Image 1: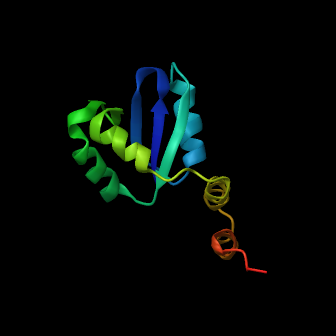
Image 2: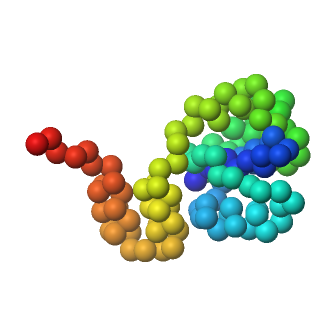
Image 3: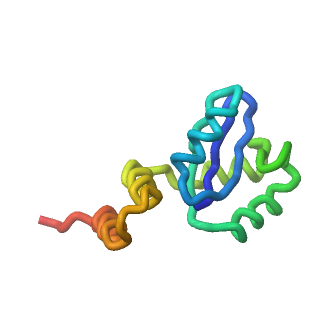
Amino acid sequence: MIYFISAARSQMVKIGKTTNVSNRLCNLKTFSPEPLVLLGLMAGGIEEERALHKRFKPFRKHGEWFDIKGEVAQFLKELPPISEDQYMLEKLVTARVPADLATRLAKATSKKAAPY
């Protein structure tokens, strides 16, 4: 999972990968001198993370932190909003629930309501 976490006062975003977004955000908050906010999520692993880092290299400030300007700002605006279902499903999956339960939950949250 690729995450985008903002340090609002400094107008920067951290682009990273993790298997547990909730834990990663909590860990980063522990060491951050300012509030952090989860801006978005997208599917992907190390290859996708590296591609984003390369794409946004002109905006890199330090490590995995990038200025929220130009192409980075536009990309963040285009990320789909994080739904409560997506966030809760991610928490369940990373809590190591049985795979079949996670699959059933994913299917249930993606089904459209039947017309009456």
